[in-house]
Amino acid sequence: MRRGRWVVAVGAWVLCAAGLIALAFNAAAAGRAALLKAAKPAPGAPSTPSPSPSPDAPRILRTPGGNVVAGCDGTQVRVRYLSPAAGFHIASADRAPGPQSRVVFKSDGGKEVRVVVRCAADGPHADVE
Image (cartoon, rainbow, N blue to C red; front, side):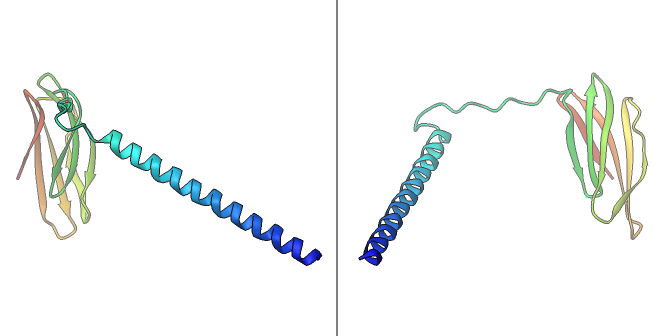
């Protein structure tokens, strides 16, 4: 008789645990569905344009030799960060504020990527040689 009660108790516990797990999965799926629905705009709703970056905001300029992060203050360009690409290093860099800035990335094999950064009306731009 004792063994029967134990089996019934364990069975009841397993059923309760299974029910709670099922409820948790259902709640998680419902929450995930609600988040996905909220993230999508309603059909026919006007989309909100993303704000355009300010001309003086720093910009990542990608080149084959590496990345240059630069910003503009009027016509003055300032290189804020340099990140060589894999297999390249910084051979030289002019980071002082001025009308232009020059960076040379050099590969281990001797290839050079020359970058000249200037400010335009919409922000910094790179000319790559």
